[in-house]
Image (cartoon, rainbow, N blue to C red):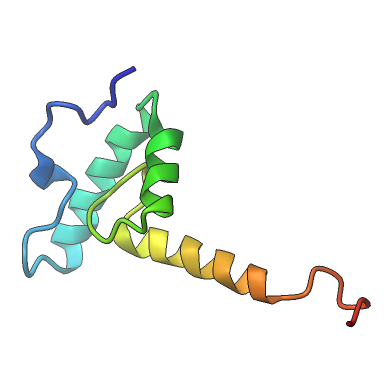
Length: 87
């Protein structure tokens, strides 16, 4: 299977230096729209999270989205599964 992004300009998925505000929001939204049509979106997302990909939109997640997911995972690993169980 091929990713929907295959052959597209990579600048579509990676922000140019200094990009901020509406330009960044719009570019990320367009990139995420491509991801929503992709047959390998889950594999792409898992890869980006596994290697802590620092740049671009991967698997429908922006840099900020991935950081949020990774931080949430880390917090959940630090919390006891059952607060009634104490060692």
